[in-house]
Length: 92
Image (cartoon, rainbow, N blue to C red):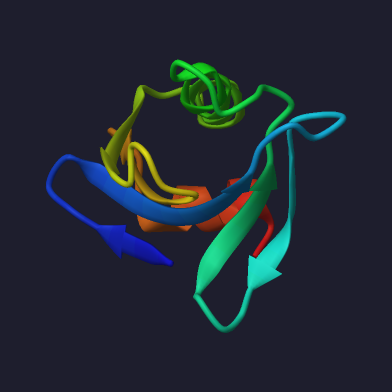
């Protein structure tokens, strides 16, 4: 779910688009990913943009998708942050 790198932290998520609001809804224990509802539809990158915007606001850091651009399962790189900071922000 979390892996620290020289650039920051990789956070594994599973996304449910077309939700009422964008928010973290829990942990998928079988997949080891943070479950995130995203208000935007999965059309023309809208859900990805909404996801990155949400995490950028949460962590106050640049966020990029490093794996899973077209999948519901994604790995996000949160730049310039530590694993400890991510855990604290996610309240894990």
